[in-house]
Amino acid sequence: MDPTRAIWIKDPLAIFADGAERGVVVKGGRIVELVAKGREPTTANPLTFDAGEHVVLPGLINTHHHLYQTLTRALPAALDRELFPWLQALYPVWARMTPESLELGVTVAMSELLLSGCTTTTDHHYVFPAGLEEAVDIEVAVANRLGMRVLLTRGSMNRSQRDGGLPPDSVVQDEDTILSDSELVVAKHHQRGADAMVQIALAPCSPFSVTTSLMRATAALAERLDVRLHTHLAETEDENRFCEQIHGCRPLDYLEQCGWLNARTWLAHGIFFNAAEMKRLGKARVSISHCACSNQILASGCCPVCEMEAAGVGIGLGVDGSASNDGSNLMQEVRAAFLLQRARYGVGKVSHKDALRWATKGSAACIGRPELGEIAVGKMADLALFKLDELRFSGHGDPIAALVLCGAHRADRVMVGGKWVVTDGAIPGLDIAGLIHRHGAAAKRMQAG
Ligand SMILES: [Zn+2]
Image (tube, rainbow, N blue to C red):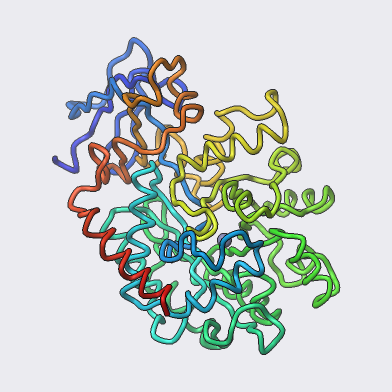
């Protein structure tokens, strides 16, 4: 296929866009034309892809994840535990991660995401045991190999049990090491511009694993380097209590004191904000990654997305770590968010289209990429195409509603920046059976200690 030639994705079964009934034309990595009903493309001589059996969505965007956690799914010691004891069961296992096991864990998670229709993922990597200093480099190499767009974070933890924090000493680093490596990683990998394939954000893990000094210094560094900021916040009641005990205030006050309350920041979870705090978040243009599956498995609670949106807070979706989900399937996460929020707010407030909007345009805003997440002229050509030929869809009416309501979980084709990275439900060149074998063996070694 000639990469400079325009491609007309022609006559889709359905498309999540207005005025594109006859499809879209992509060229040079972007969407250059929407073809309305009864029209022909004006772009000269495009290649044609017949999408008559496909439902076309903007590529889904995952705004919160810990890719390495595919190595510790459904770990017996962590089953049936809430966040803090769950973390305490897992930290010692994660401390045994090696460059080889991380590479396999990231490959599995990114492949799962791509096959679910996700074109851009974030990763919150904050575990840097000795020997794993090159973690971000490893992740960049995997993303490049798979052709996935990423916003990787240089995460951090520096408050261990010794200092009243939650993680053991073996998985934390000191502030100077973290800050100098953060600067290095941004200089090495962060691309600017609408077509960026790899970006870097800074991401201290959470208020209970990072010192105030590091929180402040990270915000200042992000400002100086002009990169985004991310952390977990307001995930559990335990966290509120911890924050009040240690810092004498609620998590959002603490965030503000650390210089984080600005449009550079997106937060994972955001379950326990009160009405006044939601207003402050909206005013500061902080956005929230809603992680419906993770919140249900850990019984953390439910992000109040409708109140958040009414307060002006942007909402995106995240599959969260593969040890608290335990999957990396973003299309299934759309359904989970739809079900959870509909149960909370009722039929009139939440539709399947809202859930799809959170996973696309909403997620794009979370990660500061307005050129993604929408099928419109000038946006990047990141698309997910689903077929409805499985048993689960048989008898469907509305094809877009069917994706969410009947439980779509696997894309047939995925395009990132105008290039097909998934075809016929598979990643070209990826030996899935071999990957599962090697990843499974690495996970077993890590879990056995
Ligand atoms: Zn998380």
